[in-house]
Structures are given as C-alpha cells and as structure tokens.
Image (cartoon, rainbow, N blue to C red; front, side):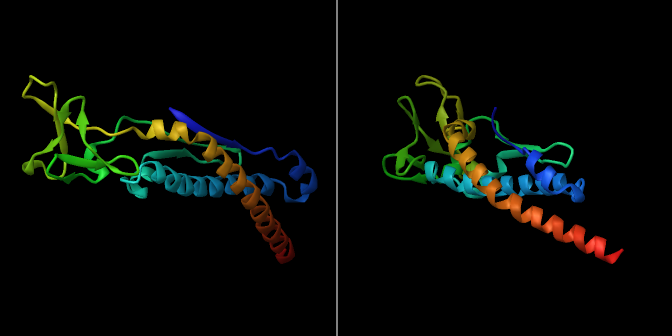
Amino acid sequence: MISVSVQADLREARKMFRELGPGVDRAASRALNDAMTTVIAKGAREMKKTLPGLNVSTIKSHIKRQRATFRRLSTDIWTSGFPLSGHLFKPAATRKGITVKLGKRRTLARVGSRKAFQVAKFGTKVFVRRSSTDRRIRLFRGPSLPGVFRARTAEFQRIARERWAVTFPSRLRFEIEKASAKAASR
C-alpha cells in the first residue's frame, strides 16, 4: 500500500487566533479535506496521462482516503489492489488480435507468446490461455494502480502542498468571519 499524507502544523495559527478556540483546528481539518479532494481529482488526471485507456472515474474509485477531523489533523490517501482487468483499457479487435490502450499507443494484448482474445458470451472481457499447451483461460490483466501511484507519489505530494497553501488561509478567513458573526449576534 502506498500513501500520501498531509499533516497540519498550527502552532503559529493558534498563537495568532487564540480567540477562535477550536475554530483554528476545524478550519485546518476542513482545509486538509478540501486539499485532498483536489489532490485526488488532479492526481487522477495525472495518472490518466500514464494510462490513457482508463477513465478518470475508474482511477478515482480506486483511490481511498482517510479524512481529517479537528482532533486528528492529518489526512491520507492511498491505493491498494491488484492488476486491473483488461476490459477497462478499451480493447479493440484487429486483424492481428485484440489491442488495448495501456500507454500512449494501442498495443497487442498478450502474455508471453500467447495472444489475448475475447469471447462473445462475456462481452468486452479479454482472456489469455494459461499456458501455450493448456486450453484453460484466465482474464488478461493490465498494470495495477498502486504501481502507477507509487511512480507518481512525488507529484501527489507536490499537489497536496500547493493546495494546502491555498485552502488553509481561505478556510481560516471563513472561520474568523463565522466566529465574529456569532459574537456579534450575542
């Protein structure tokens, strides 16, 4: 399992905004969650550049997250799993065999010397023989998202730092306005 973590260091903010009380922590947890939502969206688009055959929604559905709370000011995103099924990589039948879009170009789907094929009964699923002498078949699998995620971890961290720098001040302003409106209504 590969993960990207962001933690908030709020010592300076707590000193400056003592009158807010737990509002600083709430603002920080909201900012962390907002930042990670953006990280997931931008990160999925970046992963799509590596695997253009996949949909962004498929990539986002494989990224998990743990949300921050005002008591726990850190958040994580991770992906775990196994190689994805070949039918997610837009298979197409050609004269030479089944092609899938694993990288920038379409490539012939094969495992070793065994070409992939489709069975009409199973729709778009792509299969390969277990061995060159065996009649049994198994699903053709593409790359796993944890491997792609691992290769892009530094990029995810960079996006998270950038988003945190933008979202925390705006969330803090919102909490200050909310606290001052609440104090004025008393």
